[in-house]
Length: 472
Image (cartoon, rainbow, N blue to C red; front, top):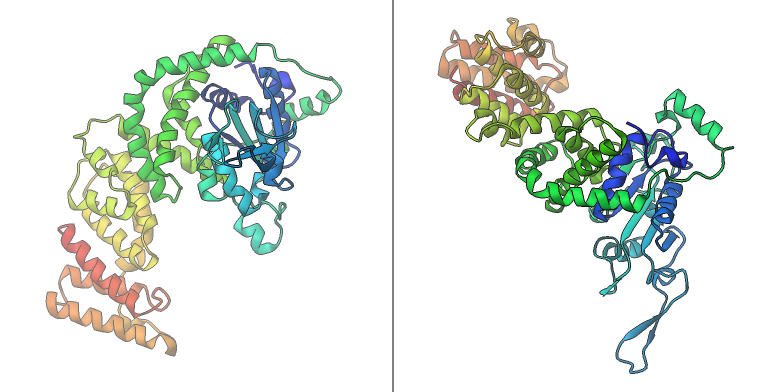
């Protein structure tokens, strides 16, 4: 698809973000750009504002005071309210506000930015001319960079969660390493070209996209609503921060991105965009976690695809009921215990996610009970059975505490394991299938698999509970 917005400005490698930028413009919702220094964050926003013919104000959040934004408060003639003695650079007449280095803002000023960004208000007073609220920040350092002392942006802090949640669009800006060799060459050559002009009238493009958005809202909301209802619990389970506010933003963003993609495709002669691709693109560019850490795009794509497929199923489908269980371990237990009729590929995903999410001292017991419950199913993918077999191999092999040598500091754990095995042997009989698997399971964790006696108890009781739940 031909670039209509970014490449005409001399920005290469941004093409995949064009629908998001157009969605920002049509929706008039706040935008946060996250990227390294020198990757044209300020440039693109300033040129967009210029092309729209709107009054633009740019502020460096690490340097300004609140008075620089609003002016000096003074009592009015009646001394009953405050007026602001403002300068030409104050915010009152701005139509576009750009707050750079927002992650370096002092906490007391950060709190005062909330109503400007989200409500277009200052001290309760409306900013009647303000349309667009844009911001930019450097990427926060990773935990590894902080531990090693190698953080590139030592002054850039992860953005406050509440402030990040005011930005419906949070977009990662491409750096040099993200560009293709072809785009890298274009960037180098472009510095000698001079000023670029847009090939299209941006105002008309935005108006066209906004009209398309309004047409799509009633058509797409019924399809996107079950998708988001399915998606949000999966994001929560993977530790993504999605508030109720963000869930509503997700719906608006998905529709806006799809409207933008349709208009851009129509203008450039591209293929008709698919709604799923728009939903995925919106998800990758709206999560507030991006303002605090680096996101795993592959993981988010997998979550998005699963939620999309499940949301298309009938409500009575067992898979729909199953995916309403947010916790992966409980989801696996539910599927096996209730013997839900789940397609093999979906069953494989549920098994893999459930086993991976279990606590280390409970993982093998869960894998063993699951293996015993599903081993007769010929439709379970071989790779899933291999995953289970790898996890439970040491518990399948016959072993006993007599064959295990433990250090003196592990002797209490060994005695606890022995006591648990003896208790189960007494209640179920030492020759029973459960007692033998139970003994092998606990002994397979020795000498280093249990951290304390509590782990031994939980592993023993957890496996016994699974044996009964799964009807083994």
